[in-house]
Image (cartoon, rainbow, N blue to C red; front, top):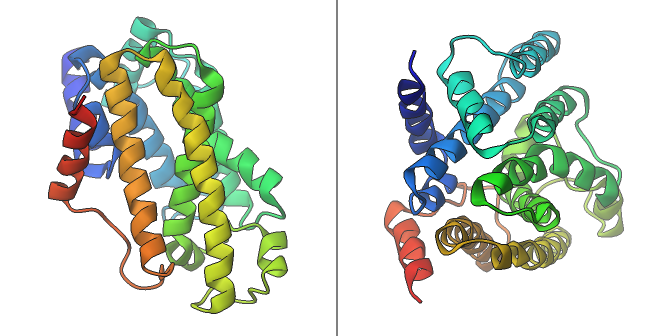
Length: 267
């Protein structure tokens, strides 16, 4: 398989699977867009294994295979593209390993005692994406890249409370559930108060993470600003619904996503 064929495949994966990421990277030059699609496709591979239906032992074995493949990798389009992207942009190995570690953690841990513990998990599964992407953007601001990744994961956690519950996972910190008097994940005044607290923390992380934009060229800043804007609008809609995350999952329509892209393009 040629490198360009591999990039074409990871591009297809990103367009098919990425709900917000694909709309951000569309404003980038081709080489950067391809590299970020390779990172996304690898992260998607990790998530699909960790969230799949295989027994935990088999999930762990497959995740370890992904980690080992970072050293060379099979003739698989994801690894062919990722290897080329790493060589072009100097993408470090450590955040890619952290993504695998986050997937492994999902096979072993289903609750989090407090926010410090949860943040450590978020740094693996989302902060690591920021760390992998930042050299592609042409920045060395790893601090804010990681914080932004954590912010986006916190919004995912708010959006996916019910879906995660069905997978047997509760990412909301246990001490905060207790502090707000939330005994079960179901609509209630206490639950809404808890979620308002979670939303405020996510917004604070988002504002801090977006300081990354100051270190980016215009098109990279447009990329990051676009997908951050999409996540912000998702959170706005969840908040406007009174944090009713137990019915239909909050999603933005394609026209609405394009409107966010257009808004970011305005000077």
